[in-house]
Amino acid sequence: EDEATILLRRQRKQSLRKQIRSRIKSSYPPTESNKLTTQSNQVFSHLFTLPQYQSAKSIGFFLSMPLGEIQTRNAIRQIVKDGKVLFVPRVGLDFEKCDMDLVRCDTTACSSDASNTDDGADGELFYDSWPRNKWGIPEPPVATLIDDVAQPGDIDLLLVPGLAFDTHGHRLGQGKGYYDRFIAKMRDGDGEDGAKDGRGERKPILVGVCLEEQFLDEVPHGVDLGDSNDGSGGIIPVSDHDYIMDMVLTPSRTLTVPTHK
Image 1 (cartoon, rainbow, N blue to C red):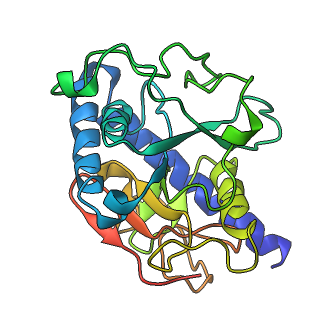
Image 2 (image 1 turned 45 degrees about the horizontal axis):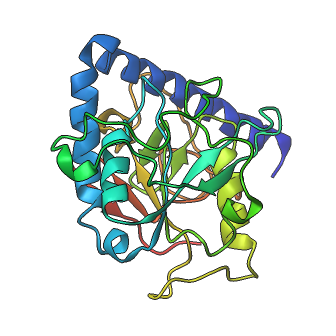
Image 3 (image 1 turned 60 degrees about the horizontal axis):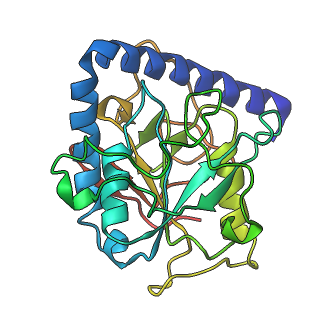
């Protein structure tokens, strides 16, 4: 690709980011945290019925920011209750490097049993005592055993956050590349074809999760994407290093993306 093509794609992504951030800010003000929790729980109710989730022994999942994105606390409580091996991100070691590991958690460090809380709103979880990074997100302590850091093949299903997703499984991230780099390590770090699960699907299975306002089935008003010329057909421009999701979950839908690279 030439520099002009790369620059144009970057500008289009930035335009989309601006629109989506504004949409989320207006749709989910801090005074409406219950609305955000309800929408989030609806997303993960779809997750827990998926055969891919039910058969997975290990899950990669993110801990949500306090505001402004899908909330994962209740879902994590359910994952712990289901007895899955859980890996969560650690990015705080070097912010400038924009690198990320997922670390296996000791999920037994809860002060109350998940089965005793019907709505998942009460009781501590294993990460409540962890230090928080600059975004207010809890992170595994630095003194983590190397054996607890995810290697290719360790994670069966990876739940991926994003500013937006579209009907082709394209993802719009925050622009730092944390997840694309991590997925590359997991999928490409174990030989040319990568690790496979029992169904022959590449591991980890990538499941994007988002709020309704973050799912794009048409170009947002005020955004000029022009002719993307990437041949992908999606609203969100992608490059060769951008990974396409296998599935996308919203409060109202479960999207399975056709086979792709």
